[in-house]
Length: 78
Image (cartoon, rainbow, N blue to C red; front, side, top):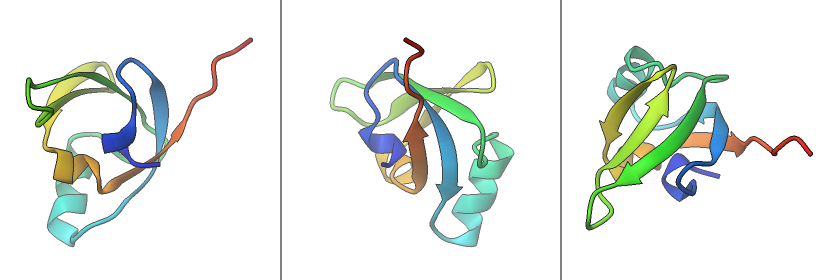
């Protein structure tokens, strides 16, 4: 699953970041690295960009950037 497909408010773990080296480096600088917990907070009126929470802070991300981030949803504890 990709970050651009994650429902608002659902937590997930980053498993990998695809794309060119520049995009991967930018994601790492923002804290989006394998093992980091992320969630989508909200999206702009037309869906792009989205607000993502990672490591306790929020950042705006374009959908094409979010599509490069592979995630694994975190199952709720029952």
